[in-house]
Image (cartoon, rainbow, N blue to C red; front, top):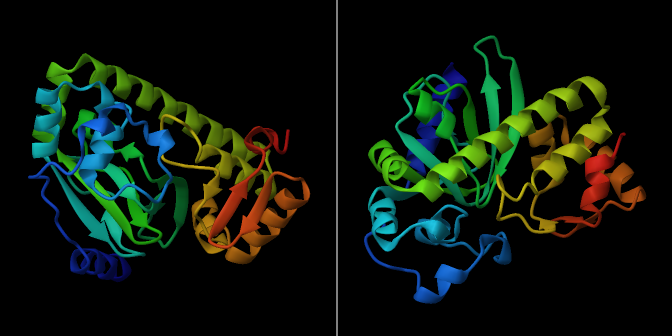
Length: 265
């Protein structure tokens, strides 16, 4: 518990607020798709909202409400963005950065559930069920996060049909992701699990901001897969030999996404 407390203090120490009180995004952005924007370009929470799959379908009134109820915070690498067991009062989106969703037990056991990259929104399940958070989310690198408060989230549920449709699709995709992860854990070796984990970061609904040059280090990949950096490096060499990826300065270039999805079959 002392370790968790230290991380909470670290998160608070590096917390910065950016209220969305001025329009930072021009009219041309209304027709801009997040998948058209490189992973490292999003600069503000307003850009994230306006280019999200659900944000592009909102009316101006609905978008104004969404912006008024959202703030932005910055977290240092290693800081907890949210923690298991805490009350859930906000919906979160990754403006820029990389996080891992994990579960840390008081016994010292930990397991990584999935990665969360730029453009992703998460936490709607706990918000809808009004239950304490069931997992931890930790920043793997410096990460900026948009926080939408509960009142705004519920107002959009009551007033926006496109927002409701998006949430149904999002929850269905997340369910499929975790079913696939359980199957992978039980049926595949480490190399194949890392291949499938990389492929999962390109889900167009869950992670619409990811491009083919994935800005992730071998150490970060190991964190996401729950293995050491050395083991992640071994797996990458296997995937490179298979012609699926290429390690480059600052990231991993995905050459064959379909091959990553099929690797290990």
